[in-house]
Length: 272
Ligand SMILES: [Mn+2]
Image (cartoon, protein in one colour):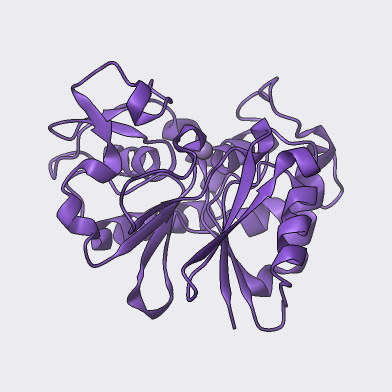
């Protein structure tokens, strides 16, 4: 009964298989938790979704920005990004079932034993974990609805970058999606910034900080597990903030974290 958390797969099915073999994953008793961005830039997005769909009873995932964008591409709302390798998946006769499985997934999941939460990006400034869970549920109910494709065009854009109770419902939803799936940095007063992707030590703008540096009190009692930010290479300087995207698709590592043992395993991409 182990809980294994794996960082962004980005369609790297072989890496996932290697990780599961390494931990001797048993789908009848273990749970595989994924930080989102399951597909897109790697060559095996179709195989990855096939496997996760087949093993869905032992898989828990949040959605990442690439997963949401895939929903738009698959519904012909957006053009395929030339950097993505989604064609075999988009041409699969089982595409509809993969879409319908993906859009059931939340943006935030609570970890076992009240130990914390997981999202693809992070916890928005000015929010508590309960706010993230609440807004994840709002987004999930939109995506689960029959007319969800009507919503997809409006989820794009950086604004609003600051949370306020007086925002419209749609702006709150857009903010929630951006914070939970795209955010890396915010300003010192908590305004979201989406242009910087580098590691904090390489950041020139001193008015920016990683989202997990904002109101750090929020993470004293709770872990926050996330992906999305490969340039961190797992380094957050906070034992409760677990950055699992370590750039496997870019030739670095796939990180597997086991919750109860509080231990990490890394799979090197060079071995694939
Ligand atoms: Mn991402």
